[in-house]
Image (cartoon, rainbow, N blue to C red; front, side, top):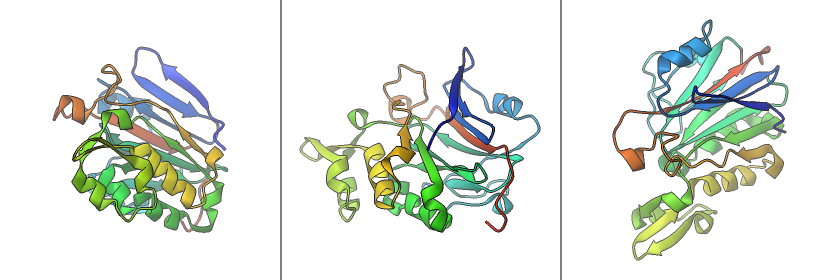
Length: 233
């Protein structure tokens, strides 16, 4: 269960959940990567070249410029970082704090089942993990075309996440789709939490690709372990 203390660094555009096992959080608009380094001065930041796919890597596989959309940590000393600007960051961590990470979930990642890939990697220990959805675009602000409805047609949750706004245009609820899929994988409802923040209608609090276009601004979503690690993961 998620029982981490939350705090916001006033004036610094930073929200953190942490305890003695781990820390995870997300930044807001105008937070530069160099400040993230100051937050973790002695730890390596693992950035990815995100490809909107379903690849999840371990730290031992990391190298600069590697294409992936998730990092699974099994040891302290490194920081998993995912960049978003409307897509969802999904944080995950074991009850003992010895394994965790974060994945990038846009509509392409959800359609390709990145959360199912994560569940396969966690294996029999899946039920011992908690999940937290960070800031992302919500249904009321996310209109898509009928082509996406067709791409998701085989998903069991398709009727839960698409609702017609007008002919040929639909509201897409990424969060509902991800939660539904996690539940179908066997995650108990109490182990899935949501920050309930929409990037698009945040009043500028967060970068939004849909709202602002190609500004290059991103939310930095990070997770770091503080304890020991699982051998052989």
